[in-house]
Every structure is written in C-alpha cells, then in structure tokens.
Image (tube, rainbow, N blue to C red; front, top):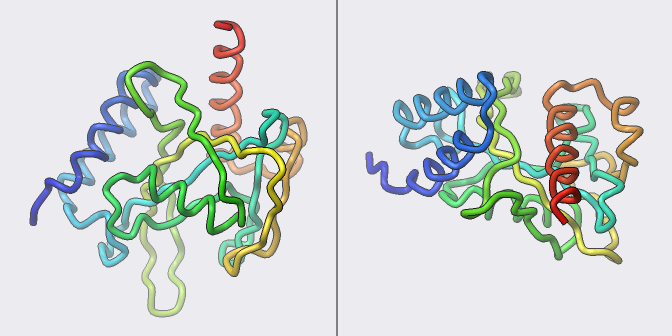
Length: 197
C-alpha cells in the first residue's frame, strides 16, 4: 500500500518530536511512527487494530474557558474530536470535528512554535468493543484551537451536552489523565506566549 498519504502526518509528528522533549513524548512519537509503518491504512476506520483520530482543545476567545462535550457513547466529558476518515492533513479533520460537534464555524489554530503547526499532544487510548465493532485503539493527534467570540453552541448527535468550563474547574469535571494533560500543556504554551509579548 502507498505510504505517500502519510507524509503530512509524519511531518507533524517530527515537529512534535522536536518541540516536546520529555521522555514520554519522545517514546510516544516512536510508537506512532512504528504504528504508521506497520499500518499504512491507519487513516481509515477499517484499520482494525486501530486508526488515527484528531481532536482539539478548544479555548474561548478570552482563553478563560475550555469546551467540553459529554460524549454519548463513552459517557464521559472529553475534548471534541473524531475519526480522520482518510484525511492525511489531520489538522483539517480536527477542525471539521470541532465545527460539526460544536455548531460553531470560526476557529483559529494556536500556532505556538516557529516553522508551522505543531500538535499540542498525542495520545493512544483503547475503545471498547461495541456491537460488531471490536476493541481497538485510537491514535489521537491533538491541536490547540481558539474559538471566535459570539458563536452559539449546537449539540450534535454524538453528544449529550456541550459546556464551556472555566479552566479552574476542569479538575472537578474530569480526572481523565489525558484531558488534564491537554489543559496543562495549553496553559504552559499560553503562559510562554504571554511572557514573550
């Protein structure tokens, strides 16, 4: 199978590797690259062991709240995101999911590093078997987005609820380690940006 479609994703992973220097982040990049090498069809849901997904940590225009969805199937408060469905530029899939799941149209990627867009985080998490769908992994590439002010939320079929949560209240809403990690990374980036101004 042609690996050419994976090049944009590999480039994003390499930029992530250069900018997130913890041992855990470096090891996760290696896991992603190994997974891509073994499963060139990983952008598709039909890749049974797992597939690439894209999600986003969405902040309001003031940077004081994060947007959460109460996921209908998983019954948890999470960031917005979903399957890339063959989209090699996974940031486009993340933006599409943000728009579809929130009802908002206007977002901007927070580009926090020189040289182009860099994911905020990477995560691999299991999805339990459901109906005819076997247990599999989601290899999630996560981005930092800011929503334009003045947009109304619309709950999609995939959600029970949507909520803007003040950053200080996030630990009371969820104890999901990967969600708290998104919050911590976003705060660190925004603090560095504020100090540089």
